[in-house]
Structures are given as structure tokens and as C-alpha cells.
Image 1 (spheres, rainbow, N blue to C red):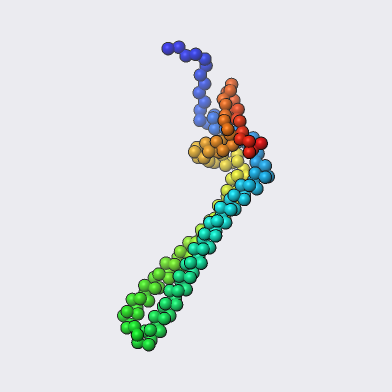
Image 2: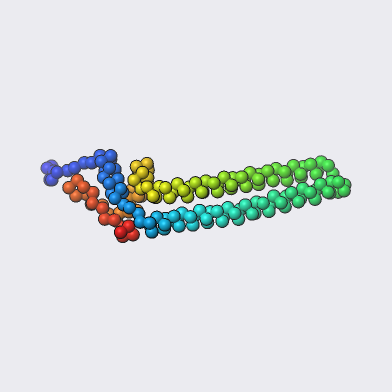
Length: 167
């Protein structure tokens, strides 16, 4: 069988270099960067509100369990609870309070992570070249698909048709 026309094969590195050329020509406007920032902040705020609600519920549970412990101690002192029963219930309450306090600490750490993520996302969006270079293949594909309607390979050159929101 005879092959018609010249066939060209490009290495992954060459294609990636060509795609980086497309990405490096994309400049997000201040308006677009503000839109991204607003989206990121909204997402972080929604998570923050959700976490604040969780924190409030956990604090209320801790307060209720501590009040129960106080009432239990009064019952023991008044002779309404025997010492063994008091010790068992008190130990359970102490363990539950400890678990709740650990959950509170996790939520505090999550907030710090969310703040860091927000900053990191904006840095990545602001510097698309660096982001593209560092990204795994699947993310590179998503980046190209996010910015280009289609890409045509003509005479060894990639010719992108950018999406209209970038123009």
C-alpha cells in the first residue's frame, strides 16, 4: 500500500512546547482575573460559612456535655448517683468532649488550608505559563480545552481558535 502525502509525527515534548506557545500568548484581562478571584473567594467563603456552622454546633455540644458533667457531679455529691456509675458516665463525657475538641482543631486547620488554597489558586491563574509547565498532562489538556475552541495543525504550526471570553 502506498502512502499519499508526507506524514509528520511530533513528539509529546514538541506538542507540549507548541501548546505552551499558545498558553503563553493568553493574557487574562484584569476583569477576567477579578472574576476568577471572586469565584475563588465565593467558594472559600461558602466553605467558611459551612465550617462556622459546624464550629457553632460543636461548641454547643461541648457546652452541653460540660453542663451535664456538672449536674452529674452534683448528683454524686447529693448521693443520687453512686461513685462507680458517676465515674463511668463522666469518663464517657470526657472522651466525647475530647473528640469534639479535636474536631474543632481540625476545622481551624482547614480554615488555614482554605486561605492558603485561595492564594495558591490566584497565583496559578495569574501565571498560566508556569502553571502549564508544572501541571500533569490531564490538567494541561483541561487548560488548553478551557481556552481554545479548536486547534488546527497547519504546516507544522498550531493555530488556536480562542474562546470568545478571552477576546
